Image (cartoon, rainbow, N blue to C red; front, side, top):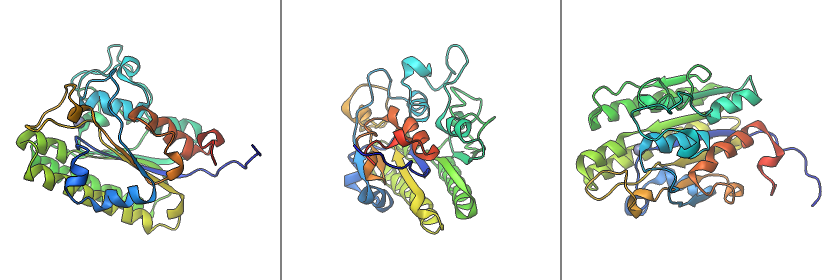
Length: 274
Ligand SMILES: [Zn+2]
């Protein structure tokens, strides 16, 4: 194989939409997600047996690239047993490229603050926006997700962002409260609309061709609402990515973090097929 020049680093948006069953993506319209898939691909892995199908352990996997046996997050309520979190992908980007502009914007506090199993993104190294959810009802998440979207669109509109993690929680909460049904569908459509605004913000940028967008979920739900078990609908997750060349690298949730670090820091090893 001939020598290829080092790829210039990409910019990356990772969007987490909590608790969205794969079958919902064919049952209801999700035009924003379809835009991502149309330019790239959709991977549909199962959660590895090393993790339970619970948000904290799974987002820790997405953000660190390790499974529970290595990152140590095994529930939503407590940090790892030794109190030390595995480095998140944004902190790893910053270590390689210290001038990178990064942010995380989330509506579930443990993702980016020291509550429950958090912080899964280190707020001491990465600029983090945590929308306050209050008592965590669907209505709370609707407000919090809207604040996350508004903040993220503003940051993406006119700043030299290298990478970002944006998280929406309403869909998961809706399924917990109401099970699979109209409320869940409405929530997923609202999350997809938020994603659409983020994609529009990126499309309007002068550097829009440098961006890779990855969208993923952390677990599914049983029909009545709820997860944590081993059924197919709980273990089935999905990863949508706008860059077709990443299809053979992004095969499961634990590969998202390392791929994200590599594409944003310009490592040639990131994309061996280019
Ligand atoms: Zn979750």
